[in-house]
Image (cartoon, rainbow, N blue to C red; front, side, top):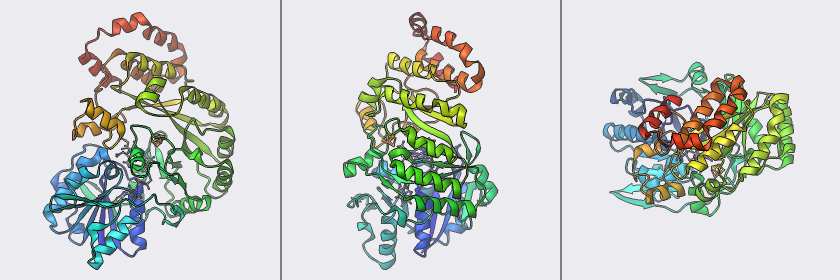
Length: 486
Ligand code: B12
Ligand code: SF4
Protein backbone atom coordinates (compact mmCIF):
# COMPACT_ATOMS: atom_id res chain seq x y z
CA UNK A 1 0.00 0.00 0.00
CA UNK A 2 1.15 3.58 -0.66
CA UNK A 3 1.06 5.55 2.55
CA UNK A 4 2.05 9.00 3.71
CA UNK A 5 2.99 9.71 7.34
CA UNK A 6 2.58 13.34 8.34
CA UNK A 7 4.36 14.23 11.54
CA UNK A 8 2.96 17.53 12.79
CA UNK A 9 5.23 18.04 15.79
CA UNK A 10 7.59 20.98 15.64
CA UNK A 11 10.72 18.91 15.25
CA UNK A 12 12.01 16.07 13.15
CA UNK A 13 11.22 13.68 15.93
CA UNK A 14 12.86 10.44 16.65
CA UNK A 15 9.75 9.00 18.18
CA UNK A 16 7.03 6.48 17.55
CA UNK A 17 6.27 7.81 14.06
CA UNK A 18 9.72 6.80 12.77
CA UNK A 19 9.17 3.40 14.29
CA UNK A 20 5.72 3.02 12.72
CA UNK A 21 7.23 4.05 9.35
CA UNK A 22 9.96 1.42 9.75
CA UNK A 23 7.40 -1.27 10.65
CA UNK A 24 5.37 -0.43 7.55
CA UNK A 25 8.43 -0.52 5.30
CA UNK A 26 9.46 -3.88 6.73
CA UNK A 27 5.97 -5.18 5.90
CA UNK A 28 6.48 -4.15 2.27
CA UNK A 29 4.48 -0.93 2.15
CA UNK A 30 5.67 2.22 0.42
CA UNK A 31 5.75 5.08 2.84
CA UNK A 32 6.85 8.67 2.58
CA UNK A 33 7.12 10.87 5.65
CA UNK A 34 6.51 14.61 5.77
CA UNK A 35 7.64 16.59 8.79
CA UNK A 36 5.66 19.76 9.51
CA UNK A 37 8.60 20.57 11.67
CA UNK A 38 8.54 24.28 12.16
CA UNK A 39 7.84 25.30 15.71
CA UNK A 40 5.93 28.49 15.01
CA UNK A 41 3.68 29.75 13.62
CA UNK A 42 1.55 26.78 14.49
CA UNK A 43 -0.86 27.35 11.63
CA UNK A 44 0.00 26.20 8.13
CA UNK A 45 -1.52 28.00 5.18
CA UNK A 46 -3.60 26.13 2.61
CA UNK A 47 -0.98 27.14 0.04
CA UNK A 48 1.57 25.16 2.00
CA UNK A 49 -0.66 22.10 2.19
CA UNK A 50 -1.11 22.30 -1.58
CA UNK A 51 2.56 21.42 -1.84
CA UNK A 52 1.53 17.96 -0.62
CA UNK A 53 -0.77 17.38 -3.61
CA UNK A 54 1.68 15.36 -5.75
CA UNK A 55 2.30 12.99 -2.84
CA UNK A 56 -1.33 12.81 -1.78
CA UNK A 57 -2.46 11.98 -5.31
CA UNK A 58 -0.70 8.62 -5.08
CA UNK A 59 -1.57 7.41 -1.59
CA UNK A 60 -4.26 5.12 -0.25
CA UNK A 61 -3.78 5.96 3.42
CA UNK A 62 -2.75 9.06 5.35
CA UNK A 63 -1.26 8.68 8.82
CA UNK A 64 -0.82 11.66 11.13
CA UNK A 65 1.48 11.57 14.17
CA UNK A 66 0.16 13.98 16.81
CA UNK A 67 1.42 15.58 20.00
CA UNK A 68 -1.24 17.55 21.87
CA UNK A 69 0.62 20.84 21.54
CA UNK A 70 0.38 20.44 17.76
CA UNK A 71 -3.15 19.02 17.57
CA UNK A 72 -4.40 22.17 15.84
CA UNK A 73 -1.97 21.53 13.02
CA UNK A 74 -3.12 17.90 12.75
CA UNK A 75 -6.69 19.11 12.46
CA UNK A 76 -5.75 21.52 9.66
CA UNK A 77 -3.86 18.99 7.59
CA UNK A 78 -6.57 16.35 8.10
CA UNK A 79 -9.26 18.76 6.91
CA UNK A 80 -7.14 19.48 3.85
CA UNK A 81 -6.69 15.78 3.06
CA UNK A 82 -10.38 15.06 3.54
CA UNK A 83 -11.28 17.92 1.20
CA UNK A 84 -8.77 17.04 -1.51
CA UNK A 85 -8.69 13.24 -1.33
CA UNK A 86 -12.21 12.07 -0.48
CA UNK A 87 -12.26 8.40 0.43
CA UNK A 88 -8.65 8.22 1.61
CA UNK A 89 -8.71 7.29 5.32
CA UNK A 90 -6.91 9.64 7.69
CA UNK A 91 -5.63 7.86 10.79
CA UNK A 92 -4.08 9.63 13.76
CA UNK A 93 -1.66 8.19 16.30
CA UNK A 94 0.89 9.35 18.87
CA UNK A 95 0.73 10.83 22.37
CA UNK A 96 -2.31 13.04 21.73
CA UNK A 97 -4.41 10.05 20.69
CA UNK A 98 -3.30 8.10 23.71
CA UNK A 99 -4.36 11.09 25.82
CA UNK A 100 -7.73 11.79 24.31
CA UNK A 101 -8.87 9.52 21.47
CA UNK A 102 -12.23 11.29 21.32
CA UNK A 103 -10.60 14.62 20.43
CA UNK A 104 -8.77 12.98 17.53
CA UNK A 105 -11.94 11.33 16.27
CA UNK A 106 -13.47 14.75 15.68
CA UNK A 107 -11.01 15.18 12.79
CA UNK A 108 -9.71 11.73 11.83
CA UNK A 109 -11.44 8.63 10.51
CA UNK A 110 -9.66 6.55 13.11
CA UNK A 111 -7.12 6.87 15.90
CA UNK A 112 -4.63 4.54 17.53
CA UNK A 113 -5.21 5.09 21.25
CA UNK A 114 -2.42 2.88 22.61
CA UNK A 115 0.82 1.42 21.28
CA UNK A 116 0.76 1.17 17.52
CA UNK A 117 3.32 -1.54 16.82
CA UNK A 118 0.82 -4.36 16.25
CA UNK A 119 -2.28 -2.28 15.60
CA UNK A 120 -1.14 -0.43 12.51
CA UNK A 121 -0.09 -3.58 10.64
CA UNK A 122 -3.27 -5.34 11.67
CA UNK A 123 -5.34 -2.34 10.51
CA UNK A 124 -3.68 -2.22 7.09
CA UNK A 125 -3.98 -5.98 6.62
CA UNK A 126 -7.71 -5.72 7.30
CA UNK A 127 -8.05 -2.68 5.03
CA UNK A 128 -6.25 -4.39 2.14
CA UNK A 129 -8.04 -7.70 2.47
CA UNK A 130 -11.48 -6.15 2.80
CA UNK A 131 -11.74 -7.27 6.44
CA UNK A 132 -13.42 -5.46 9.29
CA UNK A 133 -10.75 -2.81 9.79
CA UNK A 134 -12.99 -0.85 12.11
CA UNK A 135 -12.65 -3.68 14.62
CA UNK A 136 -8.85 -3.34 14.90
CA UNK A 137 -7.73 -3.57 18.56
CA UNK A 138 -5.98 -0.49 20.02
CA UNK A 139 -7.90 1.65 17.57
CA UNK A 140 -11.10 3.68 17.64
CA UNK A 141 -13.13 4.82 14.63
CA UNK A 142 -15.58 7.39 13.54
CA UNK A 143 -18.45 5.38 12.05
CA UNK A 144 -21.15 7.70 10.72
CA UNK A 145 -20.62 10.07 13.61
CA UNK A 146 -20.51 7.33 16.27
CA UNK A 147 -17.29 6.41 18.02
CA UNK A 148 -16.40 2.72 17.93
CA UNK A 149 -13.72 2.06 20.54
CA UNK A 150 -12.16 -1.39 20.24
CA UNK A 151 -10.44 -3.49 22.89
CA UNK A 152 -6.99 -2.45 24.12
CA UNK A 153 -4.20 -4.96 23.59
CA UNK A 154 -1.89 -5.43 26.58
CA UNK A 155 1.49 -3.66 26.69
CA UNK A 156 3.80 -4.60 23.82
CA UNK A 157 6.72 -6.57 25.24
CA UNK A 158 8.98 -7.80 22.46
CA UNK A 159 10.80 -4.51 21.89
CA UNK A 160 13.85 -6.24 20.41
CA UNK A 161 11.70 -7.51 17.54
CA UNK A 162 11.03 -3.96 16.36
CA UNK A 163 12.90 -2.51 13.37
CA UNK A 164 15.28 0.42 13.76
CA UNK A 165 13.84 3.94 13.48
CA UNK A 166 13.37 4.98 9.86
CA UNK A 167 16.23 7.35 9.08
CA UNK A 168 16.26 6.65 5.35
CA UNK A 169 16.03 10.18 3.96
CA UNK A 170 14.82 8.94 0.61
CA UNK A 171 11.07 9.61 0.71
CA UNK A 172 11.24 11.99 3.66
CA UNK A 173 10.34 15.67 3.34
CA UNK A 174 10.18 18.89 5.30
CA UNK A 175 7.14 21.10 4.74
CA UNK A 176 7.77 24.70 5.64
CA UNK A 177 6.34 26.98 2.96
CA UNK A 178 7.63 24.55 0.35
CA UNK A 179 7.97 20.80 0.28
CA UNK A 180 11.68 20.11 0.54
CA UNK A 181 13.20 16.67 0.08
CA UNK A 182 15.01 15.83 3.30
CA UNK A 183 18.76 16.25 3.19
CA UNK A 184 21.48 15.62 5.70
CA UNK A 185 21.89 19.38 6.12
CA UNK A 186 18.17 19.97 6.79
CA UNK A 187 18.09 17.14 9.27
CA UNK A 188 21.28 18.30 10.92
CA UNK A 189 19.98 21.79 11.50
CA UNK A 190 16.52 20.50 12.48
CA UNK A 191 17.96 18.23 15.11
CA UNK A 192 20.36 20.75 16.58
CA UNK A 193 18.82 21.58 19.90
CA UNK A 194 19.00 22.50 23.50
CA UNK A 195 21.15 22.37 25.57
CA UNK A 196 24.22 22.15 23.32
CA UNK A 197 22.76 23.46 20.09
CA UNK A 198 24.36 20.55 18.27
CA UNK A 199 22.53 17.81 16.35
CA UNK A 200 21.19 15.25 18.77
CA UNK A 201 20.17 11.70 17.96
CA UNK A 202 17.28 10.94 20.31
CA UNK A 203 16.52 7.37 21.09
CA UNK A 204 14.29 5.62 23.58
CA UNK A 205 15.46 2.30 25.01
CA UNK A 206 12.53 1.41 27.22
CA UNK A 207 8.83 1.90 27.67
CA UNK A 208 6.85 2.35 30.86
CA UNK A 209 7.48 4.13 34.12
CA UNK A 210 7.04 3.13 37.76
CA UNK A 211 5.51 6.51 38.70
CA UNK A 212 2.04 7.92 38.37
CA UNK A 213 2.54 11.68 38.13
CA UNK A 214 -0.80 13.37 37.74
CA UNK A 215 0.30 15.60 34.84
CA UNK A 216 1.84 12.88 32.68
CA UNK A 217 0.54 11.03 29.67
CA UNK A 218 1.65 7.80 31.28
CA UNK A 219 -1.52 8.01 33.32
CA UNK A 220 -3.45 6.87 30.27
CA UNK A 221 -1.57 3.58 30.17
CA UNK A 222 -2.17 3.24 33.90
CA UNK A 223 -5.88 3.83 33.33
CA UNK A 224 -5.90 1.10 30.66
CA UNK A 225 -3.63 -1.48 32.29
CA UNK A 226 -3.49 -0.48 35.98
CA UNK A 227 0.26 0.02 35.72
CA UNK A 228 2.66 1.13 33.02
CA UNK A 229 4.85 -1.95 32.77
CA UNK A 230 8.54 -1.30 32.32
CA UNK A 231 9.98 -2.96 29.27
CA UNK A 232 13.52 -2.53 28.00
CA UNK A 233 15.41 -3.07 24.79
CA UNK A 234 18.40 -5.38 25.26
CA UNK A 235 21.85 -3.80 25.22
CA UNK A 236 22.88 -5.45 21.90
CA UNK A 237 19.67 -4.14 20.29
CA UNK A 238 20.32 -0.57 21.53
CA UNK A 239 23.91 -0.60 20.37
CA UNK A 240 22.90 -2.17 17.04
CA UNK A 241 20.37 0.59 16.35
CA UNK A 242 22.72 3.41 17.33
CA UNK A 243 25.49 2.01 15.15
CA UNK A 244 23.12 1.58 12.25
CA UNK A 245 21.81 5.14 12.39
CA UNK A 246 25.19 6.73 13.06
CA UNK A 247 26.81 4.78 10.24
CA UNK A 248 24.02 5.73 7.84
CA UNK A 249 24.07 9.40 8.84
CA UNK A 250 27.23 10.84 10.29
CA UNK A 251 25.54 14.09 11.25
CA UNK A 252 25.09 13.67 14.98
CA UNK A 253 27.26 15.13 17.72
CA UNK A 254 25.42 13.68 20.68
CA UNK A 255 23.14 10.78 21.58
CA UNK A 256 20.27 11.49 23.99
CA UNK A 257 18.50 8.56 25.55
CA UNK A 258 14.97 9.84 26.12
CA UNK A 259 13.82 7.10 28.54
CA UNK A 260 11.85 8.48 31.43
CA UNK A 261 14.40 6.90 33.78
CA UNK A 262 17.49 5.14 32.45
CA UNK A 263 18.30 3.85 35.93
CA UNK A 264 15.32 1.50 36.08
CA UNK A 265 17.84 -0.92 34.56
CA UNK A 266 19.86 -3.20 36.85
CA UNK A 267 23.48 -2.20 37.50
CA UNK A 268 24.87 -5.17 35.54
CA UNK A 269 22.97 -4.09 32.44
CA UNK A 270 24.17 -0.51 32.80
CA UNK A 271 27.74 -1.79 33.04
CA UNK A 272 27.25 -3.91 29.93
CA UNK A 273 25.80 -0.90 28.10
CA UNK A 274 28.68 1.35 29.19
CA UNK A 275 31.36 -1.03 27.97
CA UNK A 276 29.76 -1.61 24.59
CA UNK A 277 28.74 2.02 24.09
CA UNK A 278 32.24 3.28 24.72
CA UNK A 279 33.77 0.74 22.35
CA UNK A 280 31.20 0.71 19.57
CA UNK A 281 29.46 4.12 19.59
CA UNK A 282 31.68 6.53 21.45
CA UNK A 283 29.74 9.80 21.05
CA UNK A 284 29.04 11.93 24.13
CA UNK A 285 25.59 11.03 25.42
CA UNK A 286 22.84 12.04 27.80
CA UNK A 287 20.23 10.28 29.92
CA UNK A 288 17.32 11.17 32.19
CA UNK A 289 17.28 9.78 35.72
CA UNK A 290 15.06 9.92 38.77
CA UNK A 291 16.19 10.66 42.32
CA UNK A 292 14.53 7.39 43.44
CA UNK A 293 16.64 5.13 41.26
CA UNK A 294 19.80 7.24 41.26
CA UNK A 295 22.89 5.28 42.36
CA UNK A 296 26.51 6.33 42.11
CA UNK A 297 27.50 2.84 41.01
CA UNK A 298 25.19 3.26 38.01
CA UNK A 299 26.62 6.69 37.16
CA UNK A 300 30.28 5.85 37.20
CA UNK A 301 30.47 3.29 34.37
CA UNK A 302 28.38 5.64 32.24
CA UNK A 303 30.64 8.61 32.95
CA UNK A 304 33.52 6.47 31.84
CA UNK A 305 31.63 5.70 28.62
CA UNK A 306 31.11 9.38 27.74
CA UNK A 307 28.06 10.45 29.74
CA UNK A 308 27.97 14.25 29.50
CA UNK A 309 24.36 15.18 30.22
CA UNK A 310 21.98 14.10 32.95
CA UNK A 311 18.47 15.47 33.09
CA UNK A 312 16.37 15.08 36.22
CA UNK A 313 12.91 16.27 37.15
CA UNK A 314 12.60 18.24 40.39
CA UNK A 315 9.36 19.98 39.38
CA UNK A 316 8.83 21.88 42.65
CA UNK A 317 10.58 22.52 45.95
CA UNK A 318 7.30 21.96 47.79
CA UNK A 319 6.73 18.48 49.16
CA UNK A 320 3.06 19.35 49.57
CA UNK A 321 2.71 20.00 45.83
CA UNK A 322 4.59 16.82 44.96
CA UNK A 323 2.29 14.80 47.23
CA UNK A 324 -1.06 16.50 46.88
CA UNK A 325 -0.98 17.92 43.37
CA UNK A 326 1.53 15.98 41.31
CA UNK A 327 1.12 12.58 43.02
CA UNK A 328 4.86 12.23 42.49
CA UNK A 329 6.40 9.83 44.96
CA UNK A 330 9.84 11.34 44.86
CA UNK A 331 10.79 13.34 47.93
CA UNK A 332 12.40 16.76 47.80
CA UNK A 333 15.07 15.45 50.18
CA UNK A 334 16.03 12.48 48.01
CA UNK A 335 16.21 14.83 45.02
CA UNK A 336 18.55 17.13 46.95
CA UNK A 337 20.69 14.14 47.86
CA UNK A 338 20.93 12.88 44.28
CA UNK A 339 21.93 16.37 43.14
CA UNK A 340 24.60 16.56 45.84
CA UNK A 341 25.90 13.12 44.81
CA UNK A 342 26.19 14.27 41.21
CA UNK A 343 27.88 17.55 42.19
CA UNK A 344 31.48 16.32 41.98
CA UNK A 345 30.94 14.88 38.48
CA UNK A 346 30.22 18.35 37.13
CA UNK A 347 33.72 19.61 37.59
CA UNK A 348 35.67 16.35 37.59
CA UNK A 349 33.94 14.69 34.61
CA UNK A 350 32.53 17.66 32.67
CA UNK A 351 28.95 16.56 33.32
CA UNK A 352 26.10 18.93 32.56
CA UNK A 353 23.30 18.46 35.08
CA UNK A 354 19.98 19.77 33.86
CA UNK A 355 17.11 20.06 36.33
CA UNK A 356 13.48 20.49 35.32
CA UNK A 357 11.03 22.65 37.26
CA UNK A 358 7.36 23.36 36.61
CA UNK A 359 5.98 26.80 37.40
CA UNK A 360 2.74 28.69 36.82
CA UNK A 361 0.82 26.00 38.61
CA UNK A 362 -2.52 27.30 39.90
CA UNK A 363 -2.48 24.76 42.73
CA UNK A 364 0.60 26.31 44.32
CA UNK A 365 0.47 28.91 47.08
CA UNK A 366 2.97 31.75 47.40
CA UNK A 367 4.79 29.68 50.06
CA UNK A 368 5.02 26.68 47.72
CA UNK A 369 6.51 28.88 45.02
CA UNK A 370 9.05 30.31 47.45
CA UNK A 371 10.14 26.79 48.34
CA UNK A 372 10.97 26.21 44.68
CA UNK A 373 12.81 29.53 44.63
CA UNK A 374 14.83 28.49 47.71
CA UNK A 375 15.61 25.13 46.14
CA UNK A 376 17.01 26.80 43.04
CA UNK A 377 18.84 29.45 45.04
CA UNK A 378 20.82 26.76 46.83
CA UNK A 379 21.95 25.05 43.63
CA UNK A 380 25.56 25.44 42.56
CA UNK A 381 25.85 27.84 39.59
CA UNK A 382 27.07 25.14 37.20
CA UNK A 383 23.79 23.26 37.35
CA UNK A 384 21.49 24.27 34.49
CA UNK A 385 17.79 24.66 35.15
CA UNK A 386 14.79 24.32 32.85
CA UNK A 387 11.71 26.21 33.94
CA UNK A 388 8.58 24.84 32.26
CA UNK A 389 5.05 26.19 32.46
CA UNK A 390 2.49 23.72 33.69
CA UNK A 391 0.45 22.39 30.80
CA UNK A 392 -2.74 20.53 31.49
CA UNK A 393 -2.65 17.69 29.00
CA UNK A 394 -6.10 16.23 28.46
CA UNK A 395 -6.41 12.65 29.59
CA UNK A 396 -4.34 13.22 32.72
CA UNK A 397 -5.76 13.27 36.27
CA UNK A 398 -4.50 16.83 36.70
CA UNK A 399 -6.40 17.96 33.62
CA UNK A 400 -9.58 16.38 35.01
CA UNK A 401 -9.04 18.14 38.32
CA UNK A 402 -8.45 21.49 36.61
CA UNK A 403 -11.54 20.93 34.46
CA UNK A 404 -13.67 20.19 37.54
CA UNK A 405 -12.25 23.28 39.23
CA UNK A 406 -13.03 25.48 36.23
CA UNK A 407 -9.34 26.20 35.58
CA UNK A 408 -9.35 24.83 32.04
CA UNK A 409 -12.07 24.51 29.44
CA UNK A 410 -12.70 21.15 27.91
CA UNK A 411 -11.50 21.98 24.43
CA UNK A 412 -9.53 25.12 25.10
CA UNK A 413 -6.67 24.87 22.68
CA UNK A 414 -4.47 27.19 24.66
CA UNK A 415 -4.54 24.69 27.51
CA UNK A 416 -2.25 22.66 25.35
CA UNK A 417 0.33 25.41 25.23
CA UNK A 418 3.95 24.56 24.82
CA UNK A 419 5.32 23.99 28.24
CA UNK A 420 8.73 25.28 27.34
CA UNK A 421 9.05 29.03 27.19
CA UNK A 422 7.80 30.31 23.86
CA UNK A 423 6.81 33.89 24.42
CA UNK A 424 3.64 32.85 26.23
CA UNK A 425 2.51 34.87 29.20
CA UNK A 426 2.00 33.56 32.70
CA UNK A 427 -1.57 32.42 33.10
CA UNK A 428 -2.20 31.31 36.63
CA UNK A 429 0.49 32.72 38.86
CA UNK A 430 0.90 36.33 37.85
CA UNK A 431 2.58 37.16 41.12
CA UNK A 432 5.76 38.35 42.76
CA UNK A 433 6.99 34.89 43.83
CA UNK A 434 6.78 33.50 40.31
CA UNK A 435 8.64 36.53 38.98
CA UNK A 436 11.38 35.81 41.50
CA UNK A 437 11.87 32.33 40.05
CA UNK A 438 11.94 33.70 36.52
CA UNK A 439 14.43 36.36 37.51
CA UNK A 440 16.64 33.81 39.22
CA UNK A 441 16.53 31.54 36.20
CA UNK A 442 17.51 34.46 33.97
CA UNK A 443 20.38 35.48 36.22
CA UNK A 444 21.65 31.90 36.43
CA UNK A 445 21.57 31.63 32.64
CA UNK A 446 23.02 35.00 31.73
CA UNK A 447 25.25 35.85 34.66
CA UNK A 448 26.43 32.45 35.80
CA UNK A 449 29.78 33.72 37.02
CA UNK A 450 28.23 36.48 39.15
CA UNK A 451 25.37 34.49 40.60
CA UNK A 452 27.22 33.85 43.88
CA UNK A 453 27.54 37.59 44.48
CA UNK A 454 23.86 38.10 43.69
CA UNK A 455 22.57 35.55 46.19
CA UNK A 456 22.30 37.96 49.18
CA UNK A 457 20.21 40.32 47.05
CA UNK A 458 17.99 37.45 45.95
CA UNK A 459 17.55 36.39 49.60
CA UNK A 460 16.48 39.90 50.43
CA UNK A 461 13.98 39.89 47.59
CA UNK A 462 12.32 36.73 48.95
CA UNK A 463 12.13 38.07 52.52
CA UNK A 464 8.74 38.57 54.19
CA UNK A 465 8.61 42.37 53.87
CA UNK A 466 9.62 42.29 50.20
CA UNK A 467 7.00 39.61 49.49
CA UNK A 468 4.42 41.73 51.27
CA UNK A 469 5.36 44.70 49.13
CA UNK A 470 5.44 42.48 46.01
CA UNK A 471 1.90 41.30 46.69
CA UNK A 472 0.77 44.83 45.84
CA UNK A 473 1.99 44.53 42.25
CA UNK A 474 -0.97 44.46 39.87
CA UNK A 475 -1.34 41.16 38.01
CA UNK A 476 -1.15 42.98 34.67
CA UNK A 477 2.30 44.27 35.58
CA UNK A 478 3.41 40.81 36.79
CA UNK A 479 2.20 39.42 33.50
CA UNK A 480 4.23 41.96 31.52
CA UNK A 481 7.32 41.44 33.66
CA UNK A 482 6.91 37.68 33.30
CA UNK A 483 7.00 38.03 29.52
CA UNK A 484 10.10 40.17 29.71
CA UNK A 485 11.86 37.65 31.89
CA UNK A 486 11.26 34.68 29.57
C1 B12 B 1 11.88 11.34 24.82
C2 B12 B 1 10.75 12.33 24.84
C3 B12 B 1 10.99 13.58 24.29
C4 B12 B 1 12.33 13.96 23.69
C5 B12 B 1 12.52 13.38 22.31
C6 B12 B 1 11.27 13.22 21.55
C7 B12 B 1 11.57 12.38 20.38
N1 B12 B 1 11.61 11.09 20.60
O1 B12 B 1 11.80 12.92 19.34
C8 B12 B 1 12.27 15.52 23.67
C9 B12 B 1 12.94 16.03 24.90
C10 B12 B 1 12.89 16.20 22.46
C11 B12 B 1 10.78 15.72 23.76
C12 B12 B 1 10.18 16.86 23.35
C13 B12 B 1 8.84 17.05 23.48
N2 B12 B 1 7.97 16.32 24.18
CO1 B12 B 1 8.36 14.59 24.88
N3 B12 B 1 8.56 12.87 25.52
C14 B12 B 1 9.50 12.00 25.40
C15 B12 B 1 9.11 10.67 26.05
C16 B12 B 1 9.78 10.55 27.40
C17 B12 B 1 9.37 9.43 25.18
C18 B12 B 1 8.86 9.55 23.72
C19 B12 B 1 9.05 8.29 22.97
O2 B12 B 1 9.85 8.23 22.06
N4 B12 B 1 8.33 7.20 23.37
C20 B12 B 1 8.46 5.89 22.77
C21 B12 B 1 7.59 5.79 21.50
C22 B12 B 1 7.74 4.44 20.85
O3 B12 B 1 6.27 6.00 21.90
P1 B12 B 1 5.28 6.95 21.08
O4 B12 B 1 6.00 8.05 20.42
O5 B12 B 1 4.13 7.27 21.94
O6 B12 B 1 4.76 6.00 19.91
C23 B12 B 1 3.88 4.90 20.05
C24 B12 B 1 2.40 5.27 19.95
O7 B12 B 1 2.11 6.59 20.33
C25 B12 B 1 2.04 4.99 18.53
N5 B12 B 1 2.28 6.05 17.54
C26 B12 B 1 3.15 7.06 17.55
N6 B12 B 1 3.04 7.81 16.46
C27 B12 B 1 2.08 7.26 15.71
C28 B12 B 1 1.54 7.63 14.49
C29 B12 B 1 0.52 6.89 13.95
C30 B12 B 1 -0.09 7.31 12.66
C31 B12 B 1 0.04 5.73 14.61
C32 B12 B 1 -1.07 4.94 14.03
C33 B12 B 1 0.57 5.35 15.85
C34 B12 B 1 1.58 6.12 16.38
O8 B12 B 1 2.85 3.89 18.21
C35 B12 B 1 4.13 4.04 18.83
C36 B12 B 1 4.69 2.69 19.14
O9 B12 B 1 3.86 1.97 20.02
C37 B12 B 1 7.57 10.86 26.19
C38 B12 B 1 6.93 10.12 27.34
C39 B12 B 1 6.71 8.69 26.92
N7 B12 B 1 7.09 7.81 27.79
O10 B12 B 1 6.26 8.37 25.84
C40 B12 B 1 7.42 12.37 26.27
C41 B12 B 1 6.16 12.99 25.70
C42 B12 B 1 5.81 12.27 24.43
N8 B12 B 1 6.57 14.34 25.37
C43 B12 B 1 5.64 15.21 25.51
C44 B12 B 1 5.74 16.56 25.09
C45 B12 B 1 4.59 17.46 25.46
C46 B12 B 1 6.83 17.01 24.37
C47 B12 B 1 6.96 18.40 23.75
C48 B12 B 1 5.75 18.79 22.91
C49 B12 B 1 7.31 19.42 24.80
C50 B12 B 1 7.33 20.83 24.31
N9 B12 B 1 6.26 21.49 24.55
O11 B12 B 1 8.26 21.26 23.73
C51 B12 B 1 8.22 18.27 22.88
C52 B12 B 1 7.90 18.07 21.40
C53 B12 B 1 8.31 16.71 20.90
C54 B12 B 1 8.20 16.57 19.45
N10 B12 B 1 8.46 15.41 18.94
O12 B12 B 1 7.87 17.49 18.76
C55 B12 B 1 4.40 14.60 26.12
C56 B12 B 1 3.28 14.50 25.09
C57 B12 B 1 1.95 14.76 25.73
C58 B12 B 1 0.91 14.87 24.71
N11 B12 B 1 -0.30 14.55 25.10
O13 B12 B 1 1.16 15.30 23.59
C59 B12 B 1 4.93 13.22 26.64
C60 B12 B 1 3.94 12.07 26.57
C61 B12 B 1 5.39 13.43 28.10
C62 B12 B 1 4.26 13.92 28.97
N12 B12 B 1 4.31 15.14 29.40
O14 B12 B 1 3.33 13.26 29.31
N13 B12 B 1 10.16 14.62 24.27
S1 SF4 C 1 8.28 10.05 36.33
FE1 SF4 C 1 8.11 11.15 34.36
S2 SF4 C 1 7.37 9.63 32.90
FE2 SF4 C 1 7.05 8.79 34.96
S3 SF4 C 1 4.94 9.28 35.46
FE3 SF4 C 1 6.23 10.91 36.29
S4 SF4 C 1 6.37 12.47 34.67
FE4 SF4 C 1 5.56 10.60 33.76
